[in-house]
Image (cartoon, rainbow, N blue to C red; front, top):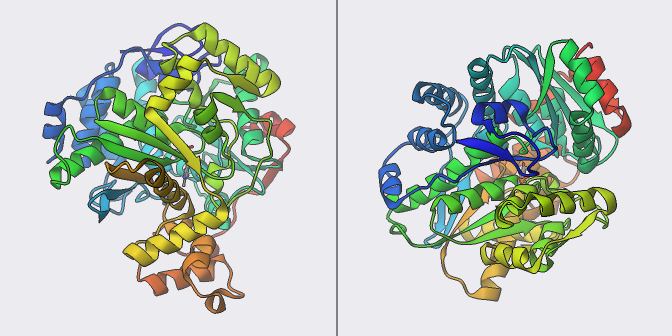
Length: 499
Ligand SMILES: *Cc1c(COP(=O)(O)O)cnc(C)c1O
C-alpha cells in the first residue's frame, strides 16, 4: 500500500518512507491510498486473541512493505508487560451493559499517547533499516502535555535518533511538567515555549518547512521527523485499539457482530478520534463518533456549522491536553470526506493560514455530520462528571475522560440513542490529581496540600494504586532547564543538537 499527501503535490511513498518523513514535502499529511477492510471473519478471529495478535494483524494491512517478522518485532517490543501494567494492554471496563470504558493509559506515562509512542520508535527504526536511511533522525515534538513525555520515553536512547520536545511553559499540569523535565537519556532534550500549544505546534511546523534549515541539518547528516499525530506511524497504532475494543465486546458477549457501537473521544488535535473514524471505515460497525471538546470548542462549532474559525479566545482548562485551536488531523478527515479533493483542501488550509477561518461545502459538512456528533463541557461540568461517575460506579476518571462522559450524557439526552458506547479514557486520574481531588475529596482534607500530597491522599481515599510513572515524581532530579520564545525555537533546536 502506498501513501499519498492530503495536499496532492508530493509523490506517493511507501509506509516506511511516510513514517520517516512524518509530514509530506508539500506540507500535507500522509493518508493511505486505499482502505484495508476488517470483515466479520476478522472480528471473530480477533475476539479470543490477545492485544498483540490483533495489533500485528491490523498493522500488516497498512504496512504492506514490512515483513511479518518486522511487525512482530515492533509489536512485541512495544506492547509487553515491562511497558504496560495491564495484561490486556488496553482493557475495556464495563460500567453498565451499555457503557464501556477503554482504558488507554496503562503505559509508562499514564496517558493514551503511550499506545502509539511506545511502538513508533520501532516502526521508525525498522523503516530506516528498510529504506537504507543513514541520516541521524531528529524527532521534533510540540506537546500539549502528554505527547512530550510519551515520546521521550519511547525514544530515549534509541540508536540513530535524538528528540527535542517543546511544551507550553504555562500550559501543562505539575505532573506533566515534572514528567518531562526529569527525563533521563543521552539523546533527549526538553524546552519550555513562552506561549500556548498552538504557538509550540506552529513553531515546529515552521521549522519543518524551512528549506534552509533542512539543508543545514542535511549537511550535518541529520533529518527531521515528527512524533506528533501528523505522523502516520502515530495514528496507525491508534486504529488498533478501537477494533480491539469491539472484539472485546464480542468476546465478553456484550454484543453480537454487526451491532453498532458509539465511540466517544475527548478530542484535541483530532488524532485519537480520527483513528476511530478509520476503524469505522475499515468495517467496525459504527453508530456515531462523539467528539467531546472542552471550552476550546472549535471542533464542536465546526462539526455543527461547517465553519472552522480559530479567531476566538484560547482558554486554559483543567483538561489541558485538549486546549488546542488548530487540530492538525482534521486535515486528514477533510481529505477523506471531500473525496481527496486536494484543490479544495489546499484552499481551506491556505485560508486557515491567512485568515484563520474556512468554510467547507454543505456536502462535506453533511458527510461529516452523518458520522460525527459533537458537544463540549466546561470545567465545572468536568468536575461534576468526575464526581457523578465516582458516586454512581465507584470508578475514577481523569478530567479528559470526564469531558467525554459529560458530552455522552448530553448526547443521550438529546437523541435517546441506546447503542452500546465505548468511551476512550485517555489518562490516569492521578495525572490530573488536583482536579480529581476537588471532585471527590472534602475541602477540609484538600486544604493546603500540594499536587503530590493530593496524589497520595487520593490513592489512600480510593484504594487505587498510583501508577509507577507518577509515584515519587517529585523526588526526581530536574535535568532540563531551557526556555525559548516561539520565534527562538529553531535556534534552540540548533543549540540542543549542537549544529
Ligand atoms: C492528547 C490527549 C487528548 C487529545 O487527543 P487528540 O488525539 O489530540 O485529539 C485527550 N486526552 C488526553 C489525556 C491527551 O493526552
